[in-house]
Image (tube, rainbow, N blue to C red):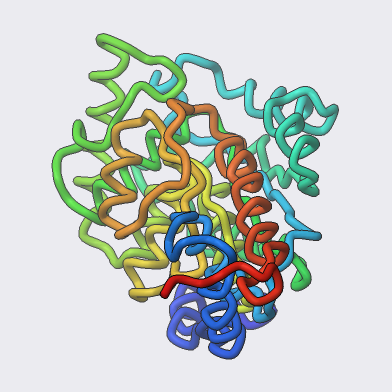
Length: 337
């Protein structure tokens, strides 16, 4: 699929031809749901979720046999400006931890039977400092974007998208601010735990990046202010749409990465749900700008795909109820008069 993508213009062209959901599967879901032994709407968002899965999986009933998580890792030039409480080498160390099964995402994927893969993107070569120039040139951006596209098997039932990258809440804030406006302080939070002067410095870095690159098109904003893992997440989400794979987005960085797709083409994220809302203040603001509502609000801010992986359990419950419950006729229960 990614053989047609060799430039930002090619990505924009792919966004112009996005498939919609499967209307027949959606109709089959809509015919069954009111017949189940419960008052209409009594399962709340679980009902919405089973319908959303059927629509984007293109089958009824929907299934959850092959959920997959993809965690993308990248390093950032702006990390050298003191925007994170941790040094950049932690990205490499955490990738090793993922691969040895020692991180939170490993435990959550094991708990909810989610296949996990970690894609490290040139960690030895951080992006450029976006206060001095674009974070990535076009070739670097497209290479990372294509790596994300390559990571999504077509038979995936739902894709969990997450990230790891020391300093990457700074590009997330810069991308969000450039796309949706407001002040840098509105979008910039503590990230890994910066406070006081370090937080003020982080806000200054975000503001400088937006001043330098904020007058560009959405995909150019992502290239100039983002990073390799942000580009790869956008690529994975576009590939998922082209393959009609539903997506669970994780926290602030993940949502910021894919917001550029929606800004380029309204409806580009219709196949996506937000797994959880981060305590990063910009994430709640960003979700609202995208017109979405997160499934969970648990005070999490870890990244790694952790909140989205946790939300897989909710999807499993939604599918089990829709597919497994008896109808009024099957159970011999009187429907409402």
